[in-house]
Image 1 (cartoon, protein in one colour):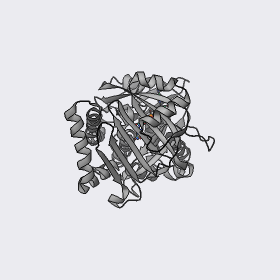
Image 2 (cartoon, helix red, strand yellow; image 1 turned 60 degrees about the vertical axis):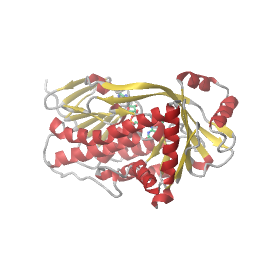
Image 3 (cartoon, protein in one colour; image 1 turned 90 degrees about the vertical axis):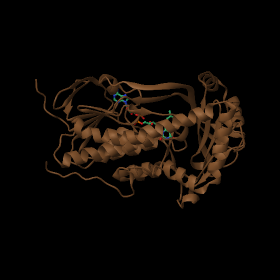
Image 4 (cartoon, protein in one colour; image 1 turned 180 degrees about the horizontal axis):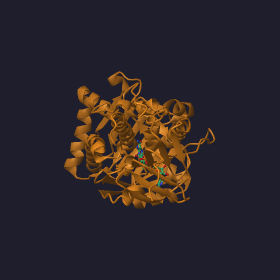
Length: 414
Ligand SMILES: Cc1cc2nc3c(=O)[nH]c(=O)nc-3n(C[C@H](O)[C@H](O)[C@H](O)COP(=O)(O)OP(=O)(O)OC[C@H]3O[C@@H](n4cnc5c(N)ncnc54)[C@H](O)[C@@H]3O)c2cc1C
């Protein structure tokens, strides 16, 4: 039986990446469905903290602004950081990056994930061409020559020219499509929480590298810090079970009491870390974006920044194909997205993996090399400026939405 095409684009996963893609194609003639297992929360007590946070680059800020979500995020709560201080626990090497070095007001923002998701969900609700279907789950998928057919568990049936798998690192869509991944477990688990410390963080993102893993204190509003503490899985288990007071003491010690005593913490959670890359991002009528395509170590806070760049690039590629009356679900169209994003994602994944290995090693020559590297970087302003521009996401082949005031347009009336 031939089903009617209900949509042009179906996005499975309305997390930060899937919702950004839908918002980027908002107010266009494309009919878009976003399916997610959960509905984003819109409200929470003002004094509470979401323990999952992201360090967003300037490029990501532009993307979220250009898709109409940034203002809603600022209204909820974002925190800029002006400095970054990184040091090695096993030597004297350290590096200090400052926004002032590149004449910028800040290096980026630390934002609770729930803030990003709430602002994006609010934006999607304003868009007449986007249908948010949640909570919902796909039961079956069928790839036909001209479209992809989706049956939801509640019996609804949808079909479109293209399905986007933006359903996170354990992507169901990716597995259904038979796309394999390669990568490895880090034997590290990130223990996360929010903490308040005796001394103010001075709007600085602090990161101490130990051979067990990096420990980051990322600045939030009202002197709070988002903690990402990468340790062995066994240590993570102990840290989660530990009494609050003992945890705060150990956290303070591991951070060399850089901001004084840890005085308060929110709840704790743990995430096993792995490197994972999909063998391909596309197949006929399917494309992967965000963590569904690539997952990396959070040590430089780049994961969702890569994902938001995926969303911005894919929106641009789809818009161009649509405007020139090309099929948006054809590999010929999607290959441009895959090439473009792999050229950005693969070097970043390699660099993060290299840093992780370099700083995780106890071998004397490597300890020496990394301390020298930090010291030299700190002493060479041009190298430092290059690092900062890169970390702000302002280098390479940027999609239009990643630039200030950038937008994409679709020719209507097709
Ligand atoms: C400890 C830690 C710290 C991090 N810090 C940073 C940082 O500072 N900066 C940074 O850039 N990145 C950071 N990251 C990475 C970042 O969290 C991820 O890259 C980001 O969440 C990926 O977004 P996504 O939308 O691709 O996937 P997800 O956030 O995983 O969203 C996937 C969405 O798909 C939905 N979904 C899943 N399965 C289905 C299904 N079968 N059907 C329908 N919907 C489904 C989910 O409900 C969810 O809404 C960090 C990660 C960790 C673990």
